[in-house]
Image 1 (cartoon, rainbow, N blue to C red):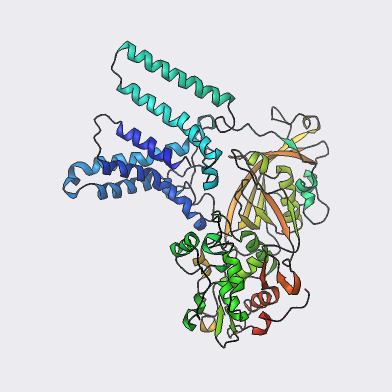
Image 2: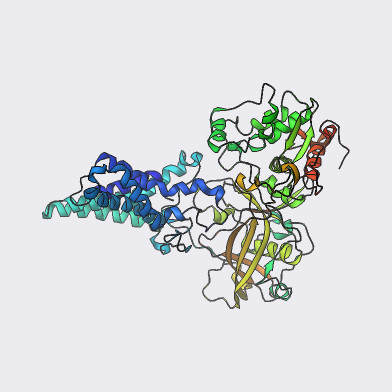
Length: 602
């Protein structure tokens, strides 16, 4: 998206410049709001299960039909009822054009997804040709906005959008005299020369990122597919074809389940996830404390996972809750919006069965503490946040800038070989960190299809890395469709009671709610058919940040303490997880003793 400032400023400039325009302050405010509203879909990201679905960014809220509805409603609100007959159609048109201005600016950006102009009638995404995309998508986090990157984005938008708009509007308002036209022409020509020079010779951001070239597999062991454990890799394209791993669904032997990622803004494992979102956000803005007085029995079920854990442990000081709050609601500086337990949730989904039963624990004070299945998932995510072992392919991106995917994406050939071997040949899932930027979001893989979109062919004019060119005999085009078991579920998906279980002790399993991502690429083959290089060919031409394979156990310290959260003990969490997959007719229970006894080594 372009910046909210540019959306509002540019749209207000254009609508104010209409011939004969006399717009009230109320209409101008509505124009600015209509220019902002479409980007509210960014806040709906946790409800979006597919990059191209209606609720994803630049989806339904960016469509022309939605903008018509928004304009009519907005015009009705800002137009006095006595003037509806005369002014409502005109004001609705102005507000619709304001929304269309937002969409036009988004079409002028590069580095983001296409725009679903015809949603909900069509899910097709539209983009302008690459040369017409003038500005990069804006950095999302406040840290980037308040730093060098944010200033550069505003400068780019001012140069390519606001300044030419002002010049054109000024030119339209000039008197038709030769001297006035000459002065305006000189200014416009100076702008055009500056913009063209920066477009061609300027740094990335002012100019488009360079085209990806087909490069060789890295020599660094951490960036090669051998970094992931497993049998010897099959690296010859023909042998992989013979194994039948192309053009069919690849499914792991164990399909991981989906969950929320327990965002730190909502308290993580210490968050009362059933509370309204505004309440959870307020606790992060202003801080919160663990309970200081006994909680009534009818309120126990609404407590956070760690609060229940502390009560079951007989810990009046709530050590597990206080430790988690220090990293979530009470963290200063406040957590980034993507901070959470996504890697732990994804790793837990690979290691244990999905909890779906409530688990009762009679605390030492005699009160019955009932753990919801989502409480158990949160505690598992906290435990697996740091697995006993983790093998990774690729490094997490820690920088900021434009076109980070060029240096942060896993090499396409390494990515393809990892998917084809680990999932296609061996039937094993793995973790994927999908953002080749400083933002992180881990999912586990529920399946994939590697489509061979073009059989091996001789290279002809394809951009090859100089050192690789003599070794390349053939190229092959593939599209890796990864189906992730998402960690972006809304909590409502985990809170559906299954009536077949007595006393409300069972909830509907979530299973694998899939998020689909495509990674088209070209692979380079040598004379023997071995895959030796490649490049991403999507738009943007990026891949994931990191792949990971985790152990079946979390990292444990002395006396079975969870290393990622020492006040928690694995024996208690493991007992909850086992009870939560029980199929007995009665509500599952766990002996309170497991919350206090030191466990034996795993």
